[in-house]
Image (tube, rainbow over all chains, first blue to last red):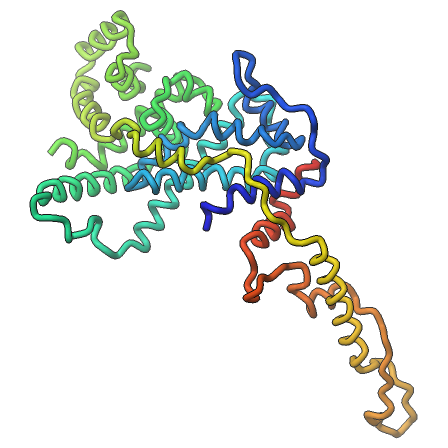
Length: 219
Length: 170
């Protein structure tokens, strides 16, 4: 149901904002492509294409962040869609208060939404998933593969549990660096902190992960 | 403890990704050779970094994402017919009038020592306060489909009504 609602949300907000559609549209591609913050302003002004441009720009990164919390490509796509849906649903409340003069404000917020969507998904999965991790009726010839996949899934669950134990800042830095594959300078810019600060947070995140995963990764 | 000690995990991560220049890599080695604590810690942190890395994004993941067509211009959605809204409002108004018309009058002309009988209660038409209208017709503003269930579009509209989408003029 969530998956079908996004186009409707897009349409409703674009047509029922109470503001006449604006004829002027931003140029969304090319060397002089507008910043995220300009697109957010355009979206608030009723530009139909602006939010779609934000989606196009960031969906790969959002996918990179949420896939840690999923078990299949379909689930990952679900969470990407859910992240943007949530961002869009909150746009009216959040965007006007966002410091749009600060570069990266939108992206930092969106990525935070994505990490939260992933975390909630994993938490809900733990709460509701009662069946075995993988179906047991797989052919016997694939027995080794099933075992390996079970072990891999168990490792992923351990890592997710360890990530849950990090502070929010540590988790964000870790997610952008490891899952988003960003250089530390970009991590810092996204989160509005210094590069050294990002590196120190990352170091402490990895140390805490080692404390929780040490036996598994080294044994 | 130097600043490098506080960034050891980050430096190891950069080296894994080939982001350190040869000079920076040599500086890291020099630090490790001179700092027993970091030297001890480095292999464990490296093992963690290797263990937490995810495989690269697969073609299947990209295909699943592409199939969603997130953010593309939405199809034209068949909106509720234009007559529906006035029809609902007319029906609601008629229901309100009927409800009020059978509502007992609250101010009675009483004679001392007598109890008002049912015949003395004069029905009058008075407008209901808004809050009472809401009590009587909590569903007045929501649409239902043929099965009497709220539609998905109404969920969205109710969000809009709650202000989640309504701030765009601000």
